[in-house]
Length: 217
Ligand code: B16
Ligand code: MG
Image (cartoon, rainbow, N blue to C red; front, side, top):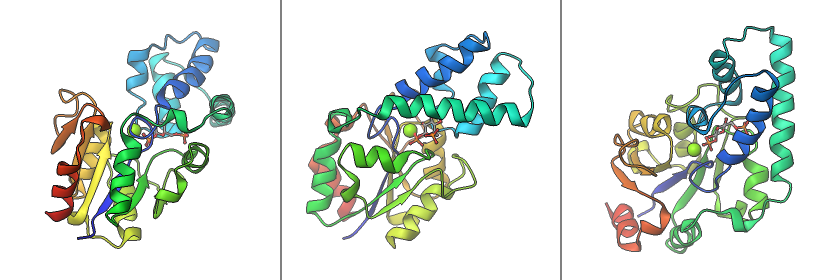
């Protein structure tokens, strides 16, 4: 059988959250807003624009649209500077074997990410060619938990939502997959991602029997 496997990017394929954090931290520091790693959890899977709003809310800062645009550009430039040296060593453990298994078994593979920088990250890490479709922050207007990103991905893969499987590390992403009527697989802490149908701490815990069962189901 041919299923559609949809991967989130940050927190699933690569740990870019640490770079997002450093870049936002610079903006927050300049505004004297306290911004911790715990606060950073609130930004996972959330769009760039919404992330800035969350940080400004933390500091109770009100500002103009023009100023926000400047900070958004500044943040992204800082973020991109951390991606310059990115290579395949940043792919999270267990991801490549799963991608290879799915390819060998002729499954469809898509990316479903909120990031507008998804394509260069896939290129730099050398895995762009695995993906039959890429849906990212440039293609969607509604953020997760809205299922838009995954529905577009399934459509591009020519699979119905019930034949699609989503790997997600964020609560909003798991909810989006569930709303879309797709199989949701949480990657990370199962006490946080308890809404997912299946959960694994990371991809090294996903064996081929589990994958073949998903394919045959
Ligand atoms: P960018 P994902 C998301 O990626 C990140 O989790 C989130 O923290 C970030 O704000 C968002 O991408 C937008 O990223 O600024 O590069 O457009 O988890 O949906 O792959
Ligand atoms: Mg994510």
